[in-house]
Image (cartoon, rainbow, N blue to C red; front, side, top):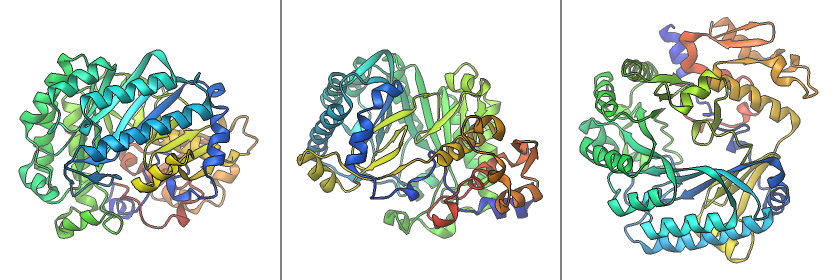
Length: 450
């Protein structure tokens, strides 16, 4: 792939497509009433996933793009968790207590900022409000720097079987540039503790495109991280959106790699992980061959949601906590972001829905196409549109973005089958954008395609 094409598509600001439409299309016209109405029918749609957002950290990492608040005190966290328990009651009342739960995911922020007894109490509330399947999976995002033994015990006692650990980079120069100092030994201790407690699947997050990051430092980070043999890696490109995340202004923009350098870093990370025995899954995940994520990729059952690539096959996701996004068969719902407003709505006995989006049949078709492109690097438009009532011609006819991608050799079309060329797979988000009916109106708040 030429440097010109890497620059052309790698510098393009496009969504990560963990949903379609993306949150940029959400509207305040969809609120608590619409959410409650759809929750009333959620049990009939099959088992659900539950996402709980814990928006607190002990310190800020300059690269962070999450909705989070920095606190050194325990009281704000405890107060927030009390509010979240009330939200669980509201959602359970609207949905009915017989909603089957198949997966639970704690994200943040730093969910492990909770006290062990607080985590146990929150899990007990969930289990009383919903009907957990016998083998329901529970995943938690963890900061290895602050993980303590009592919390590991609480995770094990409450059925946590998956843990995602932030690593990002082991290069001390890069760590200083993002204000996140974390030793290999801290990660090693966390992994050993989780393994001994029976956590069967561990993921490491790595980031490329960070300030002063080099190809060599990426190689060294991967080699160190792979020594601990996590089942999975998620490798993300740093998204510099300092207009929206003011703390990112502390990063020296001149020290950030350009599109070509970012691509080189991403590819060398992929090469090193594959040398270490990991299979490349979709755009940016890697898994050991016997991991469920790898099996899903081979079986073409891989899915994509707000946590990235997943084996979660639920069609409904209940989002709990400030800023959390839920997905129901009818569409998306997002809670208020400000903690005070989130708590205020719940105090009044109202679901804290701030905005959302109700899906049309065309949206659902485009979502299926984009998900398959992101997961499989190809999409059979005829198969995906079967039963939708749509002729797939409207997806490709007069589609200037798709035509340009074809002319540049990024994709090929044979009949109704669209394939992303192997050497251009890192540009798949740009290909997905060609099927996004709202992309041109989203502005430039997204991360780079490569």
